Amino acid sequence: MKDLVWDKMLSVQVDEIDEDHRRLVELFNILIHSVADGDAKNYIEAVLEELISCTVWHFRHEERLMLKYGYASFAEHKTEHQELIESARALQQKFLQEGKPVTSEDITFLEHWLTGHILTADMQLGTFLCHAM
Image (tube, rainbow, N blue to C red; front, side, top):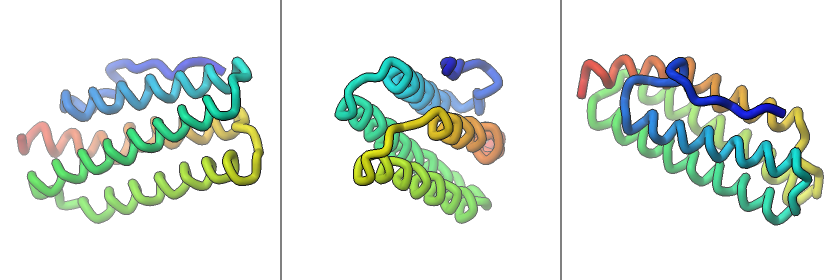
């Protein structure tokens, strides 16, 4: 598995959101390395929890900005956030409760989850915020 690389393609042109995204990419890379290196289950569990917790915090951050600046697509964007967190929590439960390992398919899912959201919904939000802030 290769690292996810932060570059200008992932930038939404809003520094505070980009900083959050960089941190999420960093945590994602820690996770893929820990899975690839066969690190202890409790360590992988901790990294996955940190990734999810930081994502939840980041989503609240974005939602606060959407409310502050009157983002018209707030409800849709928030629904996408909720669906993404539910998917990540389901993966986490599979790992924690069922004892199944995090697989390369899970990593691919998380990568698409992270980059897909940034490249679609967050880019639209970034464009809006660049004009509104």
